[in-house]
Image 1 (tube, rainbow, N blue to C red):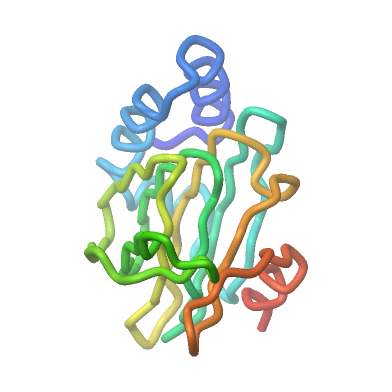
Image 2: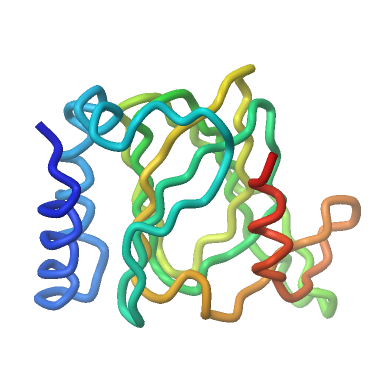
Length: 177
């Protein structure tokens, strides 16, 4: 059985004891070992959205529901992240900065497809784009090693892959119906 209050408490304790993503990854893996229990506790998503479950300077826990076929352009977090999928699928393209490019352009460097039950830790320097490739909502727990909503970070234009400041309110709007 997945207990949300215990999950949040365990993540808070883990970050207090070890500011890296390692301990939190184990907590998310434990939760995703039974994604049905997570789904039963959090509920089947009926619409896309970002639900903040916990937010502090050193930790943010979000319940995300991705729209069918939604695409989120390349972006960074400027903090580590651990993603756990409890329903659906999420495809990630990982990017790297083009060396010595004055516009901060990026190029594709790899990819990983996540399905129900999968967990993906990401370092603080990761740049990734995300696609929900299926025709239904995808549900995921995202745990971040910082304040996801208050940390300044970047995203890249889809057409020419140039860097710009991420607008958090525009990001929230992408998840609305």
